[in-house]
Image (tube, rainbow, N blue to C red; front, side, top):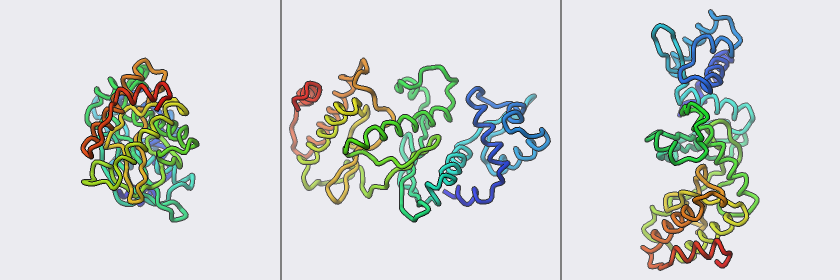
Length: 292
């Protein structure tokens, strides 16, 4: 990702143009030229000049026709978020990709002090935007549903959930900062638990996962909502980190028990391969009734 080298070369007026398009995308699927002029606070001739600049950098998409209109592409939106995080002194450079998922990209980054951190870029709807709208309760239909808005909302939800979980001392990522669709977290040297052919102490890990679920259920009043072997990082130290929290729901949700049962069922099914037999329904009942 060469975004930082581009940022150093960009004029502040290019950022004004990108921001003007971003603001207008809250209301328009394609942003009319007049709206870019209004929000950029520039003369139309200058807006045309800078629009051409950011278009040549491949930061926007231009729709030609009777009326020209514009939208940010993912690269343009990335730059806005990274510019803000750099201005805040949170990150200084971006390194290699750590993984590409259905709904996010993860990169290593460095802080100005030289510490390594992880950047998570939310890419909601990359595979099926329609399915996302059906399964995410925070998309209530009050917005026209642009990918930009959805990614930003997903990142905000995850950041809020991580901030809520951090004081509890549970095994979830440490949030450092977030802007737009990008979350900055502590970097963990681990892999998804499903990638390991063998585990040193699977029973202990299984119990640790359940301990986290119970603490989070009763102290943060949250349910992960997509828990399974792909969302549990395992490290050489034997510690775990439960990742990916944008879709977490409140324990007061009408389908809370059903979703908790699905989470626990996924965990029980995975650990069965290590000879650990368990009763998912009994575990769920124990969590809800504070018996487990």
